[in-house]
Image (cartoon, rainbow, N blue to C red; front, side, top):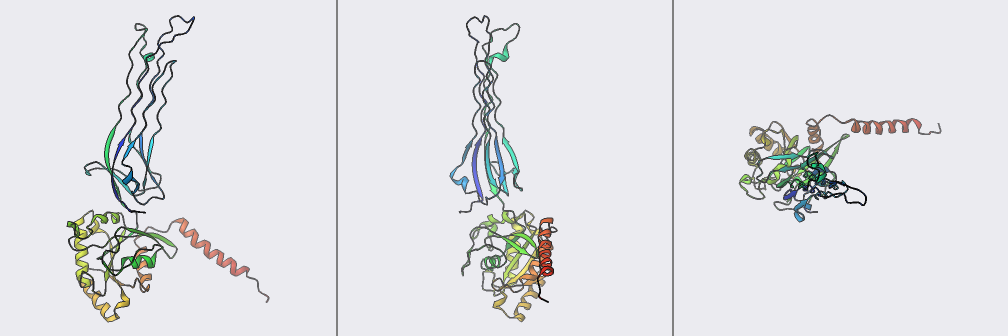
Length: 359
């Protein structure tokens, strides 16, 4: 499935149905009078966040969404049918922006969240509703209210607890493959990751979502490389993991320079990314000895890093300590997670107690 995180679409609600002009005409019925019914209401345009979607690719092929209009009023005081609403399903994490992208109209952060963006027009009045003591045979009727229409932008910001940032070839894809259930592409060239990847990490009875975004290079805020368009996917993260290549063979040359480049790009992007807590990690520990790793760690601490973790995404060395540090930034374990861990312990204890022995 292709990944698409921005789409522009046209939406229009349904117009209200017009009222009817009708008179009762039956044999032996004198003075039948007006009996034109009212028109039905037009359909609303509703957006709903649903499970199972993580891209806006469907909106590349369908850009126009129009709700049905209300039914016409009819004789015998029959009201036109109200149109069904048009429900547009979007992934959780989607934002609806105005056409100029200056206003955030809606932000979907939970499954099942719904918003009526455009309301359908009201149905028009039939001539029966105009009958008065002095106007016994009205011939006027009311047209239904017109439809509402607008262009909007859909922007997807993936919902993740932890975000991975770093220069290209910092080992982010190898790391997320090591700690989660995803299978990101790994290659010995820059920009192996072209679109964000999500993985679910399970550690010590806890679960959290980890997001890997394409690597940043100097000048990304001005569009260099892939640019900073994917940084929006980590705006909602609670903590960022900054992976740095310990081998110094990437575009940052040395770890201290790599730290500076990424930090400056986060500041240039804004959206309070520079204020998010970060865990600085020297990756690819399997390619360096302990003395060199400690020397680079000292340089990073001198450059502003509070604590430096040393891990190997390929072998898993040091990953346990890093994940322990990540858990400290996440909410307390949910009752479901806790029950799951307790249930495993109970099953083990029961199994041990009931294990049969011939002695």
